[in-house]
Image (cartoon, rainbow, N blue to C red; front, side):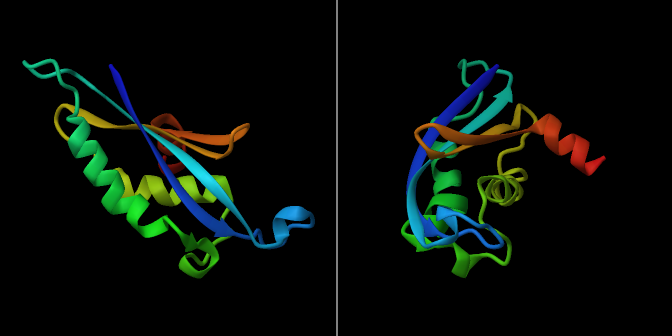
Length: 126
């Protein structure tokens, strides 16, 4: 079963080695969808939404909200690179005998997003 919680945060950035509007400083209201897969416990819960919320807020939202991303990271702050960083922050924290992190989707605009899944990461990690 898959369980998803949605988060929003506002950040500014500019893309490096990019020729176009996004090379200039600009901001986004990002939308992050965090999906966990697992088996419900005896009470019918895969993961407590409060645990999911507090973990994502601590590991991601509090660090990125109202920040200039280029000052925080030594990588180009594309949606794809942000998802890889987010996965590394959350994977061990959202893993138990009953559930694990399954998918992250980061919306940069209402019509543009990137998705990273456990299968993608399994392919990368071998």
